[in-house]
Picture 1: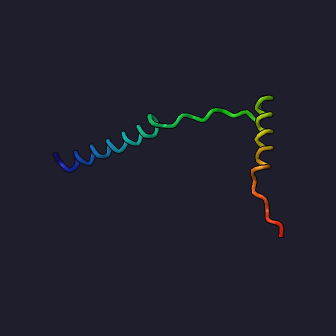
Picture 2: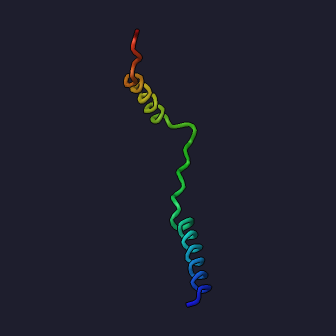
Picture 3: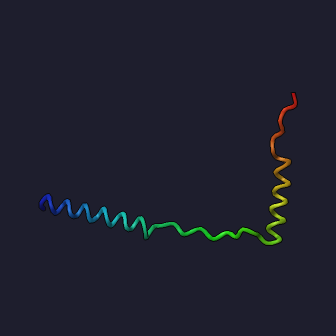
Length: 62
């Protein structure tokens, strides 16, 4: 094969690899998140917030 043919094959393989990686192997889009949760979610958020207040390290008193 000539040098020109090898360069064309390598260029085609590079373009095909980029296209496959970009479109065929793209990650799924993240689900939409609403700004306001349901009542059960609000309760869970409040419980998590309360739990965080007891697990945070306390500052030393001088």
